Figure 1 (cartoon, rainbow, N blue to C red):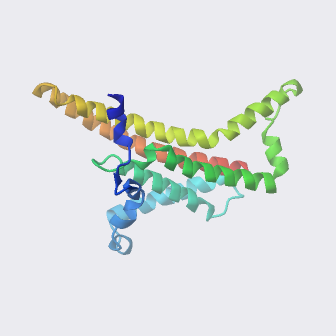
Figure 2: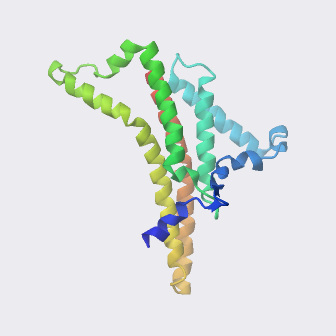
Figure 3: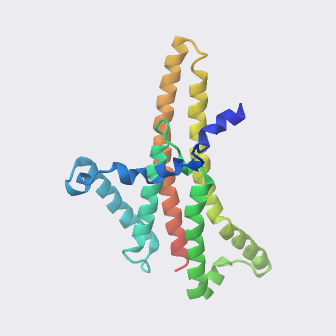
Length: 224
């Protein structure tokens, strides 16, 4: 039962090649060029969202952040948001439910922040290991705690996103598998529950992409 339940997350192979990961970039193929040339309601809404994110990320980065620094985090938000929503459609592979993708996004970002910070702001990075006002007797322990919390950051970023995507899809799969064995009246309530869960998963898809981008921005601001 558990193998069948989690098999919805397994990428299928065609002629020995796993083509499911192409869904990660499917949006570039689906969006027509007229979307970028002629303004529409969706285009105006999306541009307003990006403008709001740009202002917020610029505030989080502080005075040391440049205008172009926010673009990488906005692109990260857009990529994760699109893949989270694509996974809610039937028969489309959910790439963000795999650590292969989420850790690939989180680890290089964290490594680049750490390398830049330790090379260019060494004293500032050392100062971050001991919070202000820490008693002298607790400083060795605080250095260990801060070091561990810093090292596990890419893992927590990746696992948080993956776990939230897996949890919602498992609930939808469980509800879908129990439908054939139910009566017609119970199936009606089941459909209402699935619709409500789908709306909740849509909110989770937006929230988790926002959290991933905001935390990445905060980690970047700490090294400046």
